Image 1 (cartoon, rainbow, N blue to C red):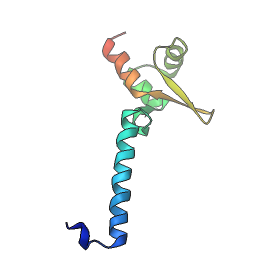
Image 2: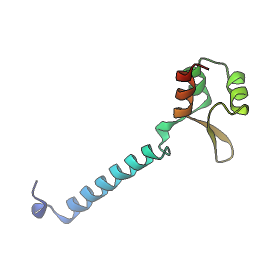
Image 3: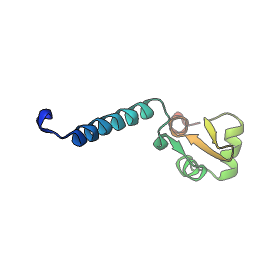
Length: 88
């Protein structure tokens, strides 16, 4: 592909696509990407525990979590997987 032959719109589309890819890579590295967060149900499935057990573990600080819009709780996938591999 010769850049000089591209139209202005095609160049803009290429730049936007490159920026989107860079943002995606940064989000994955900084743990803000949606794929790095789990719902309570997903966390329970990975841990093999019930919801009350998950909540108990959260209160004891066994894994990281965040509140989203002060209503929903998401669990850090990395900390859940680390907990599982540690075998606690």
